[in-house]
Length: 526
Image (tube, rainbow, N blue to C red; front, side, top):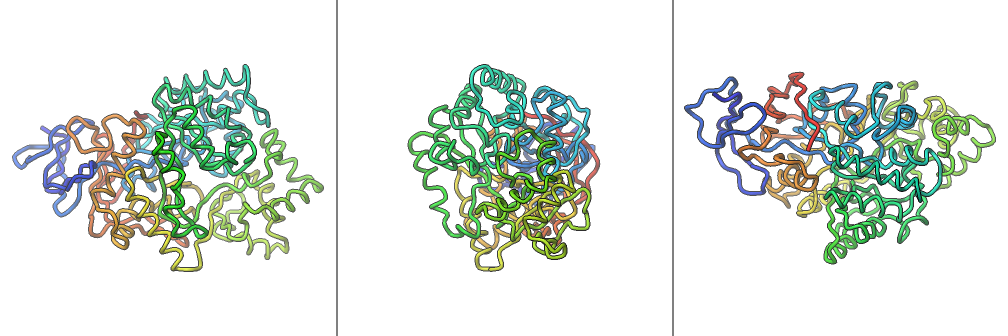
């Protein structure tokens, strides 16, 4: 007697091999039989005739760390067929941290991660993982967060990690790896991460390499003088060379300024791979990104953490300087910022900064500074898509060209908070799987699924996941390959995809006929 049989479907097993007709029999959490089960009995039979049966999708980059603790059903991800998410990305997460540091960083990150319960134990990676194990709908893996390590060693201060502070950092990372972390993640646009230098990151990554872990990097564009080669790709590759760590590039794609430059975007990486640096990459299929604009403040103005930041924002003299610096900095794309989340001024969600500034009779910089002060920093935004349809279409074609490479996988970079989130939070995987795969047919269905499943499982060491195999965990998606499509748009983003009727997580039916069941079967993996 099986617990679940999925019958009549075409199995695309995640390996990249051609699909084949087979039934899948599940006992408890695992796949027990793949074959002809016409005569077998099961407590639940899912008729997949005319549908594709694949491994559950693995989202290699999300910002769900806080939201999952508030909304464990996580329909925005689950309904896409995502059964596993990798947390801790950009070094923006909560462990390992003391109670006081957790409260501080929770407040600082509230514009991107929301506000999880304040009294949680985040003192270790093991404690962090326990909050998600069999308490949320999807599996979660964790990268030790660079921000947490800096706060636990030198606080919200612009000082180098050296001597005893570095020794403590290495011990914390080593403990985190032993407690189940899959790697170490940093975001070099953000603080306190951006106060590091290349030597610090090499030292930490030497520990990560000892455990076979991955260094996941959002590339440096702040304090570039502290990074080898001016930061960016050269610094990340140098860290890989010197430490021997596996390097994984977050959201490495083209945008409106680089549309069509696929080869150029990966030229240095391909050269380093030829020299022996172990590199992989991820992307999402949209032309713009999303983040929290508190990070836009000049580096020195993050010193001291949230209390000091708010004091500066509300100081008239300092406010004028901050406005000047924001409006003159080439990296601050204020003109196309659209607010996706605010805790206080919810009526401004969906409005662009320029329009809010005009209503208030201010410049964009003045308006952003005032809103950050009013919201205690709890603001999130996204970029507006290109006006040119041709440019947008080229970026979409680029995304498929990147995904055709065997070193790429999919990371939504989802920030699922607010009433107007970036559409990637609801549509990333079905957009690749349906809309773009058909419009730009440079990669097969089987290869597309391999990038979404097995590639990520192998890279991050997710044992017995990412394939339809006997003995593997029954993380499974049943979808209509001909009609699956994303429905989330920039102007109407909170829309679930269609064509994904069933999702199983560890053998439990989590999505049943396009409805979430409420089952919380996710595990802290690997």
